[in-house]
Length: 244
Image (cartoon, rainbow, N blue to C red; front, top):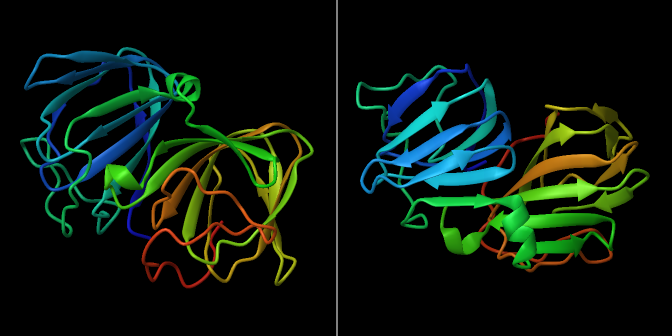
C-alpha cells in the first residue's frame, strides 16, 4: 500500500523520547490527552482528540501521555513486520527509501483545518472530507478526516488509487458491488479498496472515518458520476484483493 497503519494505545504516564531517523510518521489522536515536544527547539503542543502530527528523520521528539491515549500511526516507508522493535535511540531500523516529507514537524487540528477551508464537500454532496495531509506534504500518502451523515448511500470506484479507511465512530456497511458481499462498519474496522473494487458505503448512523490514499490526493479532487477521483500519480501495486 505504500504505508503502514498501526492502532496504538498508550497508558497514562508514558513518557518516551523518539527519533524516526529512517521514516516519516503521521499520527491522528483519537482519544486522550498528552504533550508533544520538539527536542531541537523546545516547542511543545498539547495532544488531544483531532490533533494530527507529523515527525520525520530530523525530529527527535518527546511524547507524553497524561491520560490513557489512543492514536493511529502511519509510517512511510512501511514497516516490514508487525513486531519490529525500537532501537535505544527511539528509532526503528530502515525499511526502505525515505521520501522528502514536509521538512518541518507538522502539528494541526481538524477544527483549524476546517476554518481555513480544507474541508471539501465530496462524493456528490454525500460526505465532508477535511484533507489534512496531501500530495505537497511528500509523505507518499494523503490523510483525510471524513464524515458521512446517517442515511448516506455512496457508490464509489477508485480506479486510479488505493484507499484504506479506518472507522472512528458510527455504524454502516460496505458492499463489494461485483460480488454483493457486505461487511459491517463499526469503530476500529479497517477496509481497503482499489482499482478493481466498485463498492457502496452506507451509513446507518453518522459515520466518522480516516481515509488514506496512495497515490496521495492533491487536495481539491472531486468524484465523478462513477464515484471515481482523477489520477494523482503512479498507481502502486497495492493489495491483491480488498480486505475488511
